[in-house]
Amino acid sequence: MTTTPTGTAEDASTLLDVRALRKVYSGKGRGVEAVSDLTFTVAAGELVCIVGPSGAGKTTLLRCVAGLLDCTSGEVVLEGRQVTGPPAGMAMVFQEYGRSLFPWMTVRQNVERPLKEKKVPKAERRRLVREALEAVGLAEVHDAHPWQLSGGMQQRVAIARAVAYQPHILLMDEPFAAVDAQTRADLEDLVRALWKRLGVTVLFVTHDIDESVYLGQRVIVLSNSPTVVLEEVRIDLPDERDQLTTRSGPRFAELRAHVYELIQQAKQGHRPAG
Ligand SMILES: Nc1ncnc2c1ncn2[C@@H]1O[C@H](COP(=O)(O)OP(=O)(O)OP(=O)(O)O)[C@@H](O)[C@H]1O
Image 1: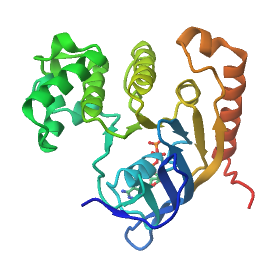
Image 2 (image 1 turned 90 degrees about the vertical axis):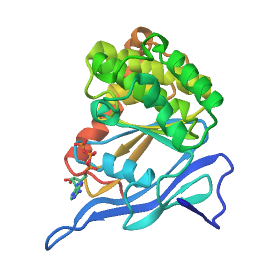
Image 3 (image 1 turned 30 degrees about the vertical axis):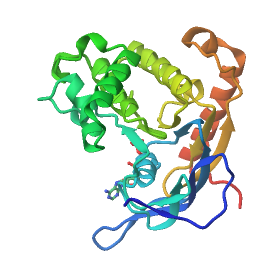
Image 4 (image 1 turned 90 degrees about the horizontal axis):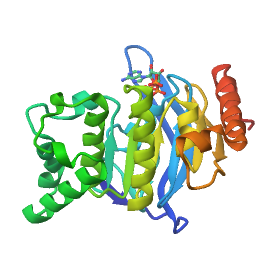
């Protein structure tokens, strides 16, 4: 059991509710307060990006949301239940694709593994794996091993594995930080396409301001550590986005500049009033 019911009434559309989350790492002599007080919600079907300066506590936040780390205080509520361990309806994609795939397993076996653990019947497993690999453009290489693939392809395998699991929420922790710029652009478009097609809720952590504006419907900007929310920026760009037109438009430039300014303020230690 990884979640417990919570009695608090919520907006019906809220899928994820992060309430006054605080995380202090205990160390020798003194603790490190990584996250001070984070409160935000994510609605079902939303694509929300989180940006913040290096060391702002983005990974800490995502690990608390994923139930991989205990919060010091506050709570994370997913689908009305308090998260106390990795919840069933969640999948995560990490930056280090090389370490998240099993090198001795084929692509198909890697994608199928969580479904076996979930006890999905064999015929359905096969179907889900086939559909997920087709969706990320890797149907042809299902019998290859991860080490035979490029970095971008390996990250596609990790995305296929998450998608095949049919999560209600997909957490992505700087998933494209280690791939080249062209591959990164392709993978960003893949995430938007999958999000639209599957209707999955996505919480995407990045330190890349342009990426956050290009991908998100909303960008949550974090202060530096100990972390609070500096501002939630609504990305009012058209839903149809493409690398060339969207990124060269005036509104993209305005939003990018606004988030950039916030990050600069964060680096200088600015905190929200009150
Ligand atoms: N296990 C740990 N023990 C002690 N302190 C930690 C631990 N993990 C992270 N920290 C500290 O917590 C703060 C936030 O770290 P975190 O990795 O969550 O930030 P981040 O925003 O993901 O950073 P980056 O953008 O550089 O990846 C930092 O000051 C970091 O040194």
